[in-house]
Length: 70
Image 1 (cartoon, rainbow, N blue to C red):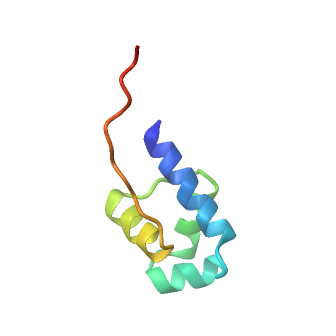
Image 2 (tube, one colour):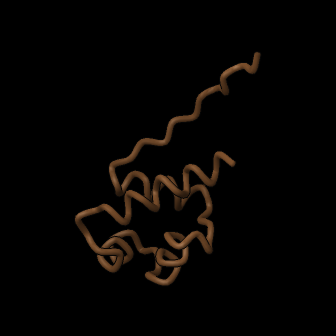
């Protein structure tokens, strides 16, 4: 579930970024088709690529303990 939230946050950042998907793909080395499928929710990216993409988009990935259930 958390992975889906991460994917969604990065996908939204791609869509709202000032650069086109084409330019993001060229500058990150991720193929345009892979990036398109990722944004559409049809493909996942491995963690290193997600981290690289997040860094490119000036996003910070934070891992923290879950809140305890009562």
